[in-house]
Each structure stands twice: as structure tokens, then as C-alpha cells.
Image (cartoon, rainbow over all chains, first blue to last red; front, top):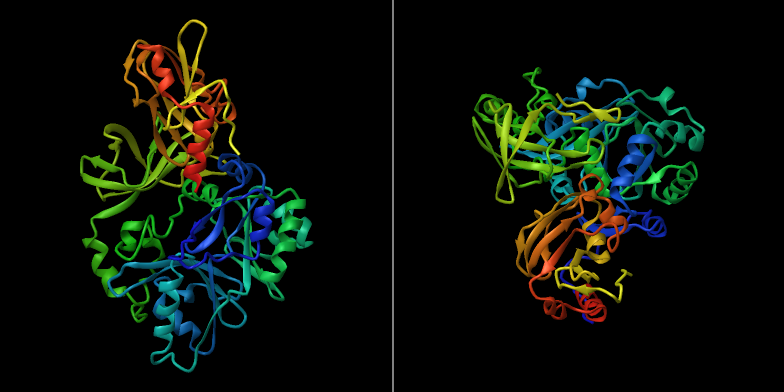
Length: 368
Length: 131
């Protein structure tokens, strides 16, 4: 037996032992060893759509910002405008762009009583953290901004129509009463946010890693099923949500990744990084992200070529939708493309329809 | 640990073959294969009456994870396909050696079965792939 010593050892979350005990199939993901599924990804998908499921998302990057420059710093590095969430307890989805207007990451920003918190992707940590640190070290932010990564925290997403009832039982708190959608509250070191990545109601909890195992067990006792990365992917695509690194990256303009709505361009004096590039690309960008459905047999998958009457494109995310029973996809296509397209599936041209996402809402078909 | 029945023959591409009393051969995918594929969502089967060649593509298995070719373990003529997989593809996961069979063929040469692996050899292949 020889041990390969090429790659750095995989990182594990505070819930690693819990995953093993629950029979998880663990796989490498963005430098972490994470649960792919706990038996059947389709069964897990249905548990979230019909009941309640929980995801260990502790691999995501949590960054806290404090100091007088925190807000002007975010005004500079984020394409969305935290000025639009003026109240403590509000959260906002948006993108971080490079100078060329490419997407460095998508993230959620939280306005706290002191400073802000950002939650960014796991796979972009080595790009995002040094990027933010380098800008924080420049004038006018230098010296009046504290930027702290929080590996001491864990994150658990509880999602599904029964998620809030389960949280009420476990936390003895009425999460729905304390926070509306895209709002959050904090109790000591524990943050509870009405956000998620499944299209379902629920909350994401950020808490000290040392407390994560106990909360996980109490949620399991409240009949909340552990859900792996595989079902997370089918759930987020059904909900019409992008996956960084698959549906967008630094070579893709937000206009071509359905992120145009997150660009806050109405305050001309806010000079965020990438602003001039995305303003110029607004008319110049000829590609758009569009939804596809294929109700006939077969599965649309990432990388498949798409032919339309307006030109060609490619599928970025494609998979079998367990809720719908047929395949759905995001494709990057010419902006005028519409109607029926042809997808090259293993050498055969198959017809699919361009539709508007989300594909699923409240457990049923919602595309149109 | 995957289930490898002793009474079947196996292809290196993870199909199983069973000689029936009427001389036909039933073909499916192994327990190991269905595990590796994950939940099966579509199966494309050959046409009844079609001639298939050994080690050649005879269908497609689409799981939530990937599309994967189904190979005929030996040459012959398709005499039956498992139409229940059309509506219940998950049967492949639930009962890979029983109700989850794919097709039956009349072999061109029954002796071709002897070219396939027995359970022990297939088990060794899986162990080697696991390393």
C-alpha cells in the first residue's frame, strides 16, 4: 500500500463524525470531505420538498467585518449595495466582481449590530479571502477595517415545509416571528437567518463549531433528515439558483449568469469594482442564462451543446429533477433564443424548451 | 460490500448474464454497478428482434449522477426487454438481479458465456478497482 501525498489533506467540519454515524458517503468537495448522500439522493430531495432536511454547510466561508470602514469597503467590493439593507437584521444576496466585471463569487451579506458578516463559497476561499484582504489593506480602508475569517463557526441549513416547526421545537424560539424572509437575528454567538438554497422555507444557522454536534442531534431527534451535496444540487437547480463555478465564474459577466438584478447601478457615485465593465457590457453581452426543460426521456447535463435559431450555446447545469420527473437545465444561450432548441445528447439531437425558472415552487412545477 | 450471486456470469463492464432453461440469456447490471450509478432515472433498452454484438453498446442507463452505456455481455438476438423499467427505473436499484433485469437474448453461441467471469473473478475485479 502506498499513500498518495500529492494533495493537501481534506478538511473536515465539526459534524464529520455525525455524517459517518448517519451512513454518509463522504467525498472530496472544494478541499473538504463532505457528505454526498446518506443512501439515496432522490429520497433526500423529497424529504426536503415534503418535510424537513438539514445540510452541513460549515465548509462555506464566513467573514466578519468591523470598523468604521466596513460599510464603505462593502460599497467598493460588492456589486449589490448594502445601503439597500439599512436595518440591522437584514441580509442581501449579491456578487463580488473583478475589474473586468467577471464574477469572483456570489454571497450573502448580513448587516449586524456591529459591522457585517459575509458568507461566501467554499470553493472560492483561496481567491476571495486574499482579494478582500488586499483591498482592505489599501487606502482609504487601511487601519479602519477589521476583517476576520471565522473557521471556529459551523453552519447548518434547515429547509423544507416543516423546517420552521422543527426549529421551534428544538430552539424553543419562533424563528418565523423573529425574522421574515432574508432577515436574521442573533442570540449570543448563534445567528438564525431566513435564507437558504432550496427554494423552501427554512433557516440557516451559524453557531460555534463546538455546539454544532448537539444541535444536529437534536434536529435529527425532531425528525429532520440529513441531506447531502447531491440533493443540494437538484434542490437548488429546481429552485432556479446558480451554482458558483458551474453556472458562473470570473470569465462570465453577471448579465450572462442571470445576476443582472443584483447589480446596484442607481447610485452613480458608488464606484464598486467592476462597475464600468458591467455598465459597458449591459448592451455588449450577447449571452443570457436561460432555463431548459426536456419532458421526453433523457437527462440534460452540463457541457452539452445547444443549437437554437438564434445561435449556439451550452448547458451549464443540467440534471434530472426528482420533483418533476424529467430533466431541467440552465444554459448560456444567445439572448434572442426562445422556444424549442436542440440539445446534442451523446450524438443525438433531442428537443428541449426554453423556459423561465424557477422550475419548482412549493413542491410543484413553476416554470413558464 | 456488494452482492455477487454465484449462479451468474459477469462482464468486466458490470453486467450480469444468466442462462435460462429455454436457452435464452437474461442480462442486467450488478449490485456494484447500481450502487456506483446511484438512483436510476431512465433506461434506454434495445429493440426486440435487434441483433447485438458482444461487448457492444446495447442501451443506456441514466442515473441522477451520469449517463452510462449498457453493454451486451455476449452476441445474440434480443427476444425480450423489461418494459417495467420504463415506468419504474428505480427497480434497477431495488432488485438488480431480479425484477431489475434489462433484456433477454438468444445467444449466437452459448459457449460465449464461458468467456465471462464467474462470481469469484468478478469479486476480485471489484477489489482491484477499489484499491
